Image (cartoon, rainbow, N blue to C red; front, top):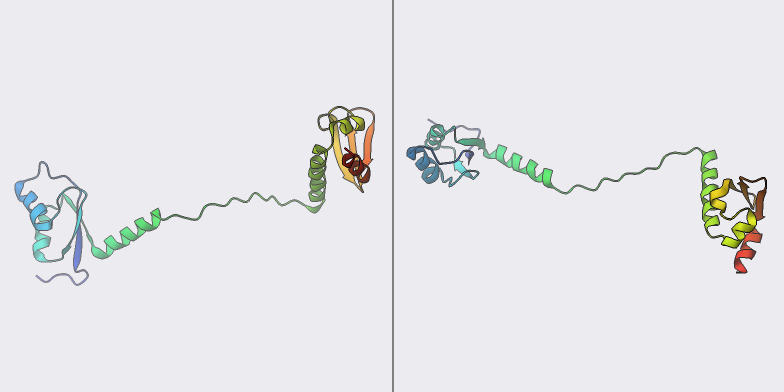
Length: 166
């Protein structure tokens, strides 16, 4: 009986334990094939003798060709390999009209966070950010529409001179 032309080596893995097996099968596994305990794999030549031993213990072992084994190991290594991190970008496209308004509003809120407390009270009320409905910045003027009847406004130059004078 000639050995198959498609493979020269086999990988034999013991998938069931040795306790409870016949002495003849334990001898075949441990001494002849060299598999000491469950979960271990050995590479053996593909000969008729080895094929006969594998046939005796076929319910206890898994057999695959060396090529199949190498491919499986390579796939396992690739699966465990570190991948680049996920990058989430939450840039929601905004049309041009809204974008300029949003930038002005954000800038104005940041600008008002620097305004001294006494200046806020002189503008409109004690806490401008809580009581004002609409805050805007247009053509060099700061506008605050408050809940009261008055509408407060101040020029940017006036604010800078007031803030710098403190």
